[in-house]
Image (cartoon, rainbow, N blue to C red):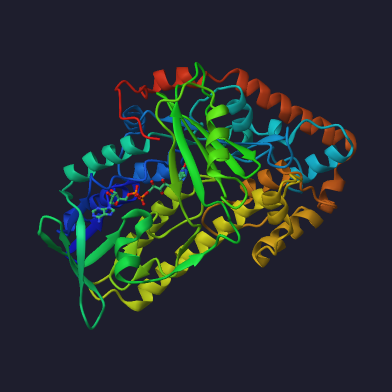
Length: 504
Ligand code: FAD
């Protein structure tokens, strides 16, 4: 049996892992120790999430309103992409589907037919969470909505350092032990290569059966000790740097993240209750650091609250996220750039898969292989989805031209071809980015099918027009009856009242 787990790192990954393990394993007598170093600190970014985080919080019995109030969280209904397909375009990738069941074919086939006839509203106006986001409205989804139009999900935009502190409280109340200190050496077994103990600068040694490496980009155990290797995906996702800066919040903050394409990358804007997080993600082959920071600072929509902070990364993943008795969760396992906010979600998948495949002390190779297979699949699917944003574009500066003209992974090329020819959208059995997500980016970035599902022809033009008009009007009416996002925060008891630390 694994009797002791040692987690290295107290960033979002470390504390999510400690909280989940404390919740699931406390009763079994397994000891959980988390080591973190205030001197090293955390990466200090990572504010936009995906809806799965709600299930993580729910599984831990966390009260959502309390979590929101403690982390200055706002609601996130999706990501608005500005200028991605071409300057001036905008669309939202929502956490919900477009349209309704109106016939034998999927909704988007009817919309495409109507669009070709030149009589249609933008695709986004047939999606309730998009129209609500654009109108700064939010109400919790109904449990049993009377119409598919009202079915959607939501996520949060929160202060990652406050979320870490919230989970640190949670985990320690359930028995996890926090140790402050810097790990300076690691002892591994000469025969098995299993990690046996780590030593802190103070000289204290901490032994364990299972080690979770949440030490961030440095990969203290998984790479520095175990030399696991890194699959470099920067040919596919070339952005490798970012500047991040918080600014004052505006009077009204829409419940969505914004990602605006720039010549050498893209810029994020994440509205929290007490400030707005901003960042410029870019590739240093296409734009200098100075240009990147200038662009960020000149386009801020509020007074900066700190100096811009520069971050460096290489997109890709460890060759094995689980190696011997060490599991890399968070940035130590890999990073696929912040577009689409997938990193915290990957942390969650790492934790869930670890709990599902909870090992014995010798970490059976079959469990390790299965964990790595599941995580590899998740990383590769996310990589393809992120690339879609860069390749489906008419933007004409070197970064975008190179992305468009490069050899895409077959798995992505096939998906684009299937949609372009017949409007077919990939569907995974599980994991991130199901058909509504692919659909919203395909159409949002102007990939339209050449031919539609023939079943859509069964409906005549008049009936199709009337059905689309009804959906459009119904959504507009629902949004009109939905309260404002700010009112929701007050009514839900989610208003942030503390003056928390400012992290970029
Ligand atoms: P870190 O936050 O770096 O934590 C590492 C921990 O390890 C720290 O506590 C540190 O003190 C400790 N440590 C390291 N070495 C030692 C040592 N020797 N001894 C003791 N302790 C040690 N994700 C999202 O989901 N949404 C986003 O919007 C998003 N935006 C991002 C934007 C950028 C530019 C970047 C770079 C990342 C973004 N991410 C985002 C990713 C997100 O920030 C991370 O997934 C998340 O913060 C988890 O980080 P971590 O805990 O793995 O690492």
